[in-house]
Image (cartoon, rainbow, N blue to C red; front, side, top):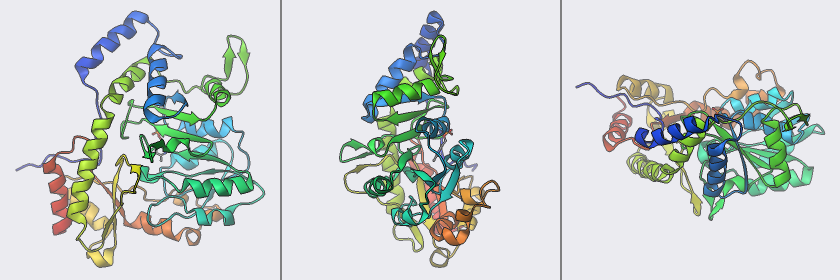
Length: 371
Ligand SMILES: *Cc1c(COP(=O)(O)O)cnc(C)c1O
């Protein structure tokens, strides 16, 4: 029997018939982009859903990172994590700033707050942590350090859509947070993203920056960029927002099945849920201890492929090993032992809202049998 391919992720798609009336409406209005009707509606709806006051839509999840650094006039050095998607560090580089890598916490993969202070120099002006896999960073401890040294904090919250702690949005932490609505994420607008800040004046500045710096027909207040979301994707986003809670509930059920089946396999570690946290199950990473499991991460990755199951090694290789960054002093592997360990152990299993029972069982079966 031929097996159906199981990819690591699959996009959450709105119902096509529901989308058609939105398209007709856009055609009637003939207003395709530049803060249109659906753009305004989606900004409002997302702010409400996420529980934040000030949110600006972007055309992807990388430009809000770049723009956040611009908006806050960050200079010099930015402390960040090597255990992320490359866009995190690229955004620092694109601002002409120096990324400084700090090691991560083994349990979560997030920036280890206890290692931040040693990396601070007179040139440090900001910290850019990532809520990896949607697991909240230790935001309280990071804020304490930032307050002592007068640093800004920009969270790359690309994985953390809808994550709340004791009912409060995780996006309230730090000075700004960025989101990605790429097709592979928990919530998508095909390509898209957002920048969350905490006051009206800052939102106004962000909105200028994402529209070339225009503050009126003939006034340009800053060297801005073009990062506007169009009406078609905004309408698509409104429709997808209606089903995202259902999608997160399905992801949770899948995570529970995986955890129950994998908990007794020696050498396989999964992430835990934390008390009071509304997780989004953006990814399902497992960490493989080769000695205890009896098979390497890469061997399991290849074995799964022979069954048409495509996991992904997020995040391997580490950002600090790429040619643009490996010459930095902070990229020395001796400075990042935990990040290297996780990068060599991690495998993200298929995780998406409509992954069915049969698919989950197929994945579990291969991990149990190791063949
Ligand atoms: C996806 C992602 C981004 C970039 O988002 P795009 O929408 O693809 O530009 C940035 N940071 C992290 C951690 C991501 O996973």
